[in-house]
Image (cartoon, rainbow, N blue to C red; front, side, top):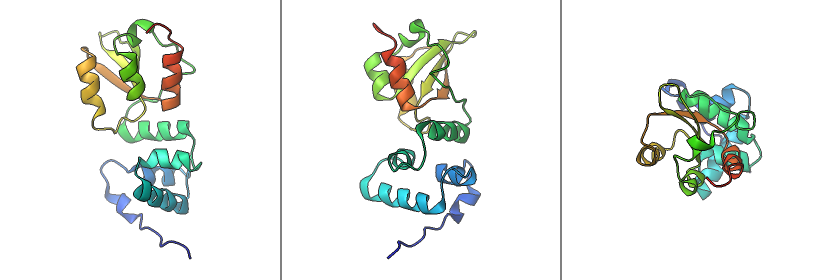
Length: 156
């Protein structure tokens, strides 16, 4: 027996489009896949995006790009840009790996660009603000790219 279809019409009036709605709109997932991921998430917990990746419905970079669009922050491909070791050093590596977050470079105005995996995480910004004492510009990267970025910075 097939599970009942979930009604996705509630997405239409959202001020900030829901992740599932954006993924459907872009054709990255089908409604049945969203239903399955929502059911899986309800049963086992976790984030919708992580569940979609775990189920193999989307790739990490697709999720990161859509999260960036959803939150209005830029997407960074950390494999194609250099990470300034001095910028990375402003955040303790253990905290950066656990969040995941990676300071990438300083801005000309004296701030710092920080790549994060989930800009929608309500607890993320307060933790970053406690650790980083200058203005931050958030960007989105995949969690895997952030972890890889930390590994490429020995001694930080």
